[in-house]
Image (tube, rainbow, N blue to C red):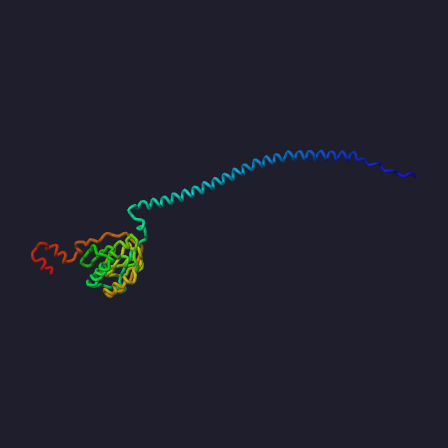
Length: 263
């Protein structure tokens, strides 16, 4: 019996399928080639937009920085203008100043007139303060001083080379009726005698100045200070508070026997 032979497999169909696959691959490449230029074009369009956006952000940052600098310059110019509004005040006068209250360590201290005269004399002789004005009432007295030749010796052991005044004014007050210190360090402390230094460059007198009171009238002093306040005008004694002797002198002016009566 003769053996059966299998029919030869043909590759025609396979070749055709491969050809179709190649065509499809070629078309896919062509399509991809078309897409790439579009993507490149799109990317190229995006990049200028990104660059433009980045440039815009930088411009805004620069503008903001310039605005801040302009504000700083304007603020500095305003400060300078404020300083220039004080043409009569020297540069070394634009300093922080203080008021200083000098009182006795002993509460209720009342100095006799001899002690007051001794203090005034010592202040003048040492060149610390010179009396220039006074207000004398029946129950109180205020003596006003200006800086003497050596006012810095109240605060400094060495010399003072600045043109700015060491202080502006000194006032000594004593009274029969108590008054109160309005400095925060000694609130509501009753006083009958005090010295106030107004507009001082320094806050604390040195020991040599404090010793002056101890040597002259056996008095130990204490001090307090605050930021300087505007200096008030010197007091004027009201008519009804003037001393009795002064009233007699004014009424008896030109009348015979007045001086005998006063003596």
